[in-house]
Image (tube, rainbow, N blue to C red; front, side, top):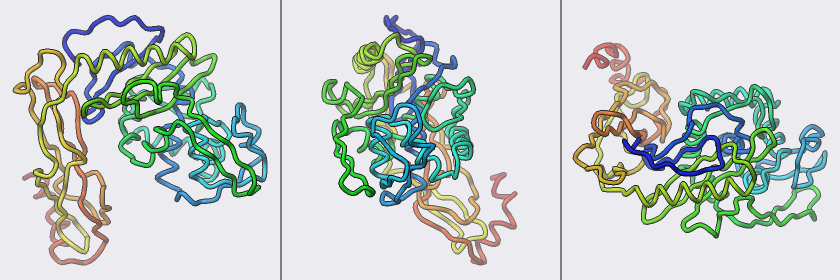
Length: 362
């Protein structure tokens, strides 16, 4: 984080401003204190839906989903919608029943889906988060922090389909059963179309959580993510987010670092059809500078696995480019595999497995 931090008057108890491409924190307030995340939870539900269901998967609305508190879609037992339509309702209207329906479709039950949520949170480095439901309805064991929610928001906004959904101001939702049922949905994020460059993301509100908001905006190539937790009123969360975005854009600039097209990397593969896979950066590494900071104080350190076990999937994380400012890590960009490598009996790949301890010491 920048060495000096301006005092910003907020209604929210906890908040954070993060540069999206690297995850560098620009400003924070009580960012590691646990709060109820309310419907910002649905970012995780949406992510797991995109990872586990095709857009045309038909989802049956159970009695449990229909009976969930606060269902602006008016879901009824026995109705059926595609996962794509439910995602619109989940992320635009914040429909709690849609979250339950998707959780049941993917995990078989809400509790099993919560286990998937927590496993994903651990992978994303969300160290102070625990989920027990897919919608964020208040539960003492369902909590997160502004920093963890920013990590999640940064990750989900790297998914183009997710970005498309949360960037919509309006959409027409259509049911599969009954076929004639439709609903005009308007995004609960009031900053869309109002704040310059607004790209998403997700609102949240309960009496216990107060006003919550994950917001992102992009101006001149710089994208910022803001998390607001426990604002006094639903309107205050938007006012707070605007203040934080204004601060971030005023004080932060990006300068060119490492072009992803020029990065060259590779990893050995054991027990595969091939013995080696090329690697690439998930995105360009640009250096976010705050106020008078100098580019020369940045350094990029590459932490890459030397040996991957087949099967390797295209896009699989194989390492991290760590961004250091004056020796302190301030951000990171994933390093990914270029292609699929299936399990097999390539002789060189077999030898990689045999001599893996040697590779690890190199």
